[in-house]
Length: 118
Image 1: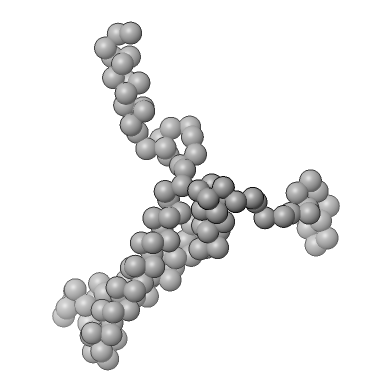
Image 2: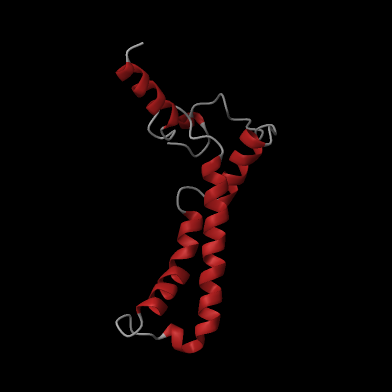
């Protein structure tokens, strides 16, 4: 194998799954749930320390406190973005723990044939 071909093969083997044509695996939902929850707890702790002054701060007066305030209000969105925690827990249960999928009686029925489907 030529050296250029070997370098391409080794680079593709170490590249992230999102750049390859494969499933990203089990790490993203675990990391998302862990980090989003930690961010929310840290931001809430920062707001507790800041007290009422932290709720009415001018961003130009104290940019660090403004960052904590932004994190406090954005953290719930991070937990929901890209799928809720329930979806992430289902992915972990099925792909990591090997548990069976949820029972779906409508799996073989077309969406437009479902009651209420359009």
